[in-house]
Amino acid sequence: ERLSSMECEVFERTPGEAVEQALERVRPEILVIRSSLLKEPQLEAASAALERLQLVMRAGAGVDNIAVSFLMQRGVSVANAAGANAVAVAELTLAHLLNLDRRLSDQVVSLRAGEWRRLEFAEGPRGLYGQTLAVLGFGSIGREVAKRALAFGMNVRAYDIALTKEAAAAQGVTWCSSPLEAVDDAYALTVHLPLTEATRALVNTDLLAHLQPGALLVDVSRSGVVDQEAMLHAATERGLRIGLDVFAKEPSAADRIFEDEGIRACKQVYGTHHTGARTAQAARAVEDAVVRAVSAHLHKQPVPGMIE
Image (cartoon, rainbow, N blue to C red; front, side, top):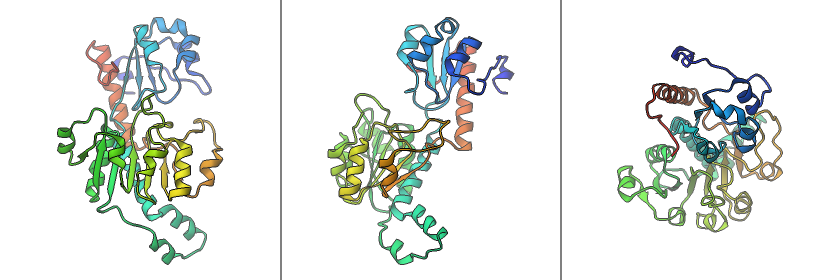
């Protein structure tokens, strides 16, 4: 409705329609896309539509589902709603940390089965207060996680290639020069990095070995940043407890079956259904970002969130 009120003619994909089919049918000037793939095969299949396309707006953070270079080489701008879902993802991150430490979901399952295991569940938790949290990736999501972790009384270390000592100090966290320095003897690790060649399998056997035994790992970033085999090995050998919102073998949005046996068989893995950014608050924030970007484009102003 908000886009229509801006004198935009808005078209939606029909049920079962592929992105490339919608592009060919509509041939838009602006494409708003969420999680569907818009890689070279899809774009080449709709090559005629690219003649009119001027802006691709990702309704979310990150653009790893979009062939950015391919589009930019053809004069198409790409933007995203960076930071719009940061609060929602940070909230889920803290929920995972609390669940891993207190085994909340296990307690719920046990209670629903008619069991009362108070003494057993009371033995394990260390609590988050006073513990050290390593945050890898200190963009908008990492900063929101740090705020909440500090409120819980955690000591937060942060690593990000763009983070300065001054910026870290301003956020109340300890600046680290490397991921290894950040995780060394930490109780918890949360991952908020984009998937690039530099970050692929960054969280590997060596890095995980520097966490405390029985540590907590939460990955809400992109599948591939954490080496899944190394992660599962650490769960078996070092008691690592793991919260995941992304998976190496993640089903598509249309699928209803999760088939990764390695993840399903590991009792120390607690997974959510890639719902980190899915709250009403995040939806409103993303919608606002999309409207701002489209409005700026229509008025020939700089588009917020533009990928350079």
